[in-house]
Length: 162
Image (cartoon, rainbow, N blue to C red):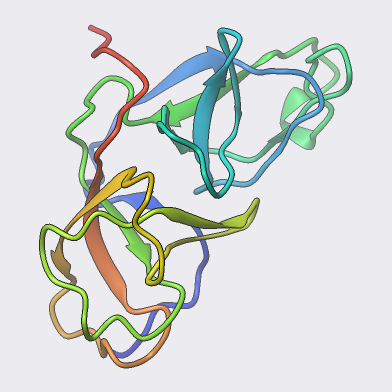
C-alpha cells in the first residue's frame, strides 16, 4: 500500500456525519484540519492545543467579521463550517505521522503538529495527548513519513450532539 500523501485528517467511515458550527473571525481552514473552540466559535487548532473539537469537513476562510469569503460562500453571508467528530466523539479518523512511525504502537497519545493544510500526528511529542492511536492502516510502510494510522480524538472539546 505504501504511504499516503494527502495532508490532514479524514474520517475512516464514509458514513461520518458533519455538523455545521459557527466560525470565528479571521480563519483560514483547510479540509482535514483539526479544530478547537475559541470563545464559543470554531477556530483552527495549533500545535499545543489542549483539546480538539473535531476535524474540518470542508475548507473555509473568514474575514474579520467572521463571514466566509471563500468560494463556498457564493455571495451569501455564510458563517458556518461543517465539522466531523461532533456528532460522534468516538469517530475513527485516518491521519499520518510527520516522520518514521515504526516505533509507534496502539495506545500512543500523540500531539498535533503542523499548520492549516498540513497537519500531522506528532511522532516526537506527547504532552497534550490530544489524539489516541488505534493502529496503522493495514499494509502501510511505517518506516516512511506519511504512513496512514487510525486514531480517535483523545481529548475532545465537545459533548455529543444528537
